[in-house]
Image (cartoon, rainbow, N blue to C red; front, side):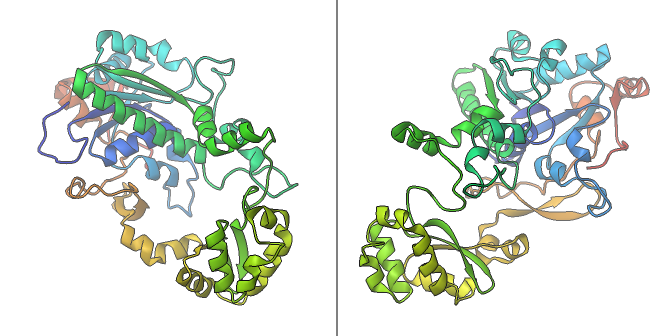
Length: 411
């Protein structure tokens, strides 16, 4: 850990990332946002995420790459060459944390796995992310978010009742695995600070996707009934997560607790509905959900989304307006949250992207604006800090062992 005047929580912590796409880079992105110095080691072709969705419409930029790599330092190393592999190993052993989500067996073949590195540096925190875990029969299968959503049971419960399975609208398994890995690393760093001991962390998209469904698994174990797709509603309570069409779009409401149900009935001007034998208890409302939704749709459908929200909020009923991304950006609540931050796009431009979803008082106040690194932008800088001379760096570059800016791939 490096001495630094930076007051961010992870200032002085050095992280080396061998990452692709979302899960690994997403984990180290959280560490970078918290102040860690993240060195992203890339092949001469770069993280495959740099090419994801790049088009004229995106002005040659990858939204995926920009979302999970801001504030890092990029170094290009050709680990197919012995000298390049030695550089990668040197940087990894000088780090506090190593994170990798490469293909199964790659790190072992290079001697960069947890066993090899921690044998030489027991205090190292080493985190590995795979698609299906390191011990089962699928350990060598390539794993992407969609496969984890499918094989974790998630898609079997997502979609309209009687319809086809659906994935979530964003890579929820990847993103959640990034968050889980970052949490494990923070715990390991705390232990490292107390005891000097490192840690070997392993997780998978499959394990995280299953753990995210803990409530559904508990209900399955309790009832013995196989969970099924149920659309937007929740199968055991009503109204809950039900979507209702309004004049200019849709709202979602939740009022399944008896006192919440009474408040909802009062709000829509039908207080007697709360005691109607068809809807008086939660079990009644679940059993008679179609009729219930017809009544709620008729009464609330007369309003715009914001009018319905204001009405229900006055009666302390949980309600949300279904908003598109433009409406989200315009939301006063979102603007007040500070979740969007300025990010340099690596081309001299600036974007507003979601950052850490929490505040830490003054701990993060002094951090610089994060910038998305160009491929190999920091190679010379990182190598110089690691003790390589200018002549060494020039020789390594001339031999194609390392690549330094400007490189062909942008963010």
